[in-house]
Image (cartoon, rainbow, N blue to C red; front, side):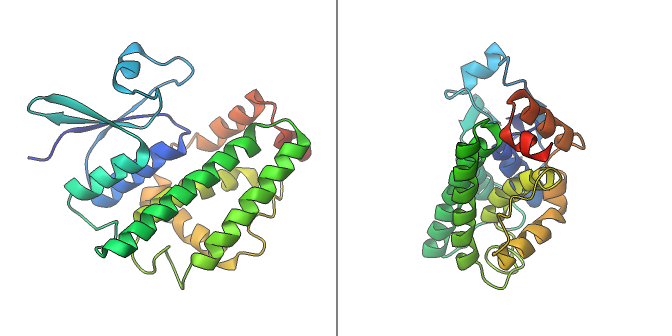
Length: 225
């Protein structure tokens, strides 16, 4: 019998979305438990060494086992669940995919700075850094529609939440991040239509992200005013 899975999450977290997308692509049933990261429950802190989401709780005969770090969780899902394969079988290609997953995480780090800073100079440096990173992604993409061609992979699950930020940002300001990246634009459009990607967040995601920007007095909002 398949292990019972509980995903501890937060409504805005892009790392959580990776795991949700992977589970959905695999057709795996799971319970999602959203928490408030501004007021973390004691039970959560006991199972999350880093105090971060996502955490995947796996029910075993010996009790629940808590897995943390999104890429580790995605790898576990790939290794233990049926459904479509989300990693290449070839060891070298699989390693390349893992590397691009990490590259996606570096883009998220830059995005955090972009969306939270109130400083115009920092904002522009982050915008340029993100644009440069996507230029590298553009060079790595093939004919599509997904990162590695016709098959959806964990790299797609990593980048889909990144693109989702821009769905909200684009309503506020033209960041011109993808202006010279036609393959990235096509990939973004394809991922936005994927059912697993669409269902990885609630309908209130845009409002929650805008509220997040307001709380941080984001420079982006000043430019949009």
